[in-house]
Length: 249
Image (cartoon, rainbow, N blue to C red; front, side, top):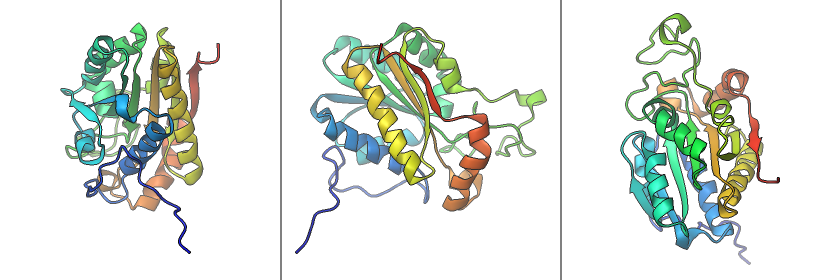
């Protein structure tokens, strides 16, 4: 007798081929978001705002209404969507370069205003789609195509701490940093995204989930080595945890 142990979420396209690099964690993030949209009965009312970067492929995976924003402008576009259609559930899906470099102004002002949207930022410490250049989150000593000798704070400054910056915004209701480097952390990331989604459902303010993710191709590591790098090199710079939680007050 066959037992169903796996079911594709309704928000995932029926037929989709994986276009991400082998070992990339984007697929995991997309999957757990889809599971939550089903569990919270949000599929029919969701509008996603993606931006430039690996998020441009969201249309290949989600059977949802998706708006492609100009580079860095996802939270600005999400603001317009939510204000014009306040009954909709709106979240952005962005990379760290998009969110914290060209889009830093839009991101911080959206959180500061307390826009009733959820931002999901995938942090892989480089510009993954365009060739592995240094990003605002590239850690000290990390080699990229534009820091071939490693990021030097005397030349390129220090990495931006996304959650730490977001947590001081008065309009932010929930801010957390998670990871996808193990089954345990994947489960925790899903819990944190759920809390962020619920804060929007309850109209409590803006929410942000930063997710530490691998980029095996540009890091020039195997998937296993890439997850090890997250634990050994990224955790000390970007500690996991809840940075702000006004949802229970």
